[in-house]
Each structure stands twice: as structure tokens, then as C-alpha cells.
Image (cartoon, rainbow, N blue to C red; front, side, top):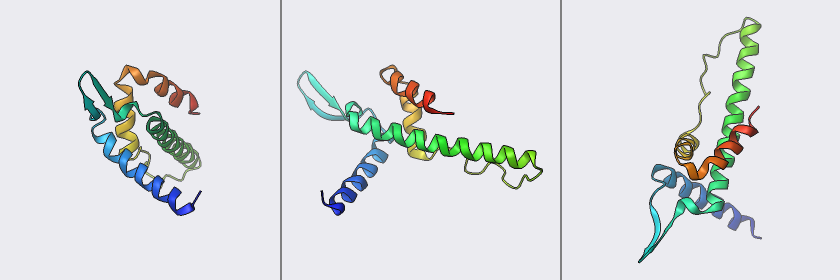
Length: 113
């Protein structure tokens, strides 16, 4: 496909996911007897899971690097940057408090070193 279309779609998805994690229980569509939620979009959950995994791995790598530095007597880094970003943190906290996402949480945890 067109590279600019792919970039536009990725940008849209990133913005949409950022808005979503601030209130994941907002319905996408409400009809009599049927409510559809953004939280049920498989692609969205996969994107958020990938962000959480990537950022958690980065944090883990920084922590290991810092431990090695401390063991070698160099303790300049005071742990800055060892946290998930807002989107990953909000998505992670939400997924951990909703039993429907236990499989996603388990997958993220098992993917970590």
C-alpha cells in the first residue's frame, strides 16, 4: 500500500489508543439490547499489548544496565526513565483490573525476561 496512508493510519491509531486508555469503558456504539465497546477491538488490544511489552523490555534493559553500572562503582543514573509511559501504564493498569484480559496480562508477563 501507499506509505503515507500507512503512516496516517498508524498516527490515527496511536492517537485513538491514547484517548482510549483514559476511558476504556466508553461504548463505540449503543443500540437497543446491544452495546459495542472500543475495548473489544482485537487490533487495539494487540497494539496496546505490544506497546506495554516494548516499554517493559526497555525498562528491564535499563534496570539491568544500571545494576551493572552500580556493581562497577558507577551510579550516575538514579533510575530515571525506568517507568512505563502514560499510555502503556494506563493500558496495563486497566487490563490488570479486568478479568477479560487475563490472557493478555499473562502473555505480557511471560514475555518478559
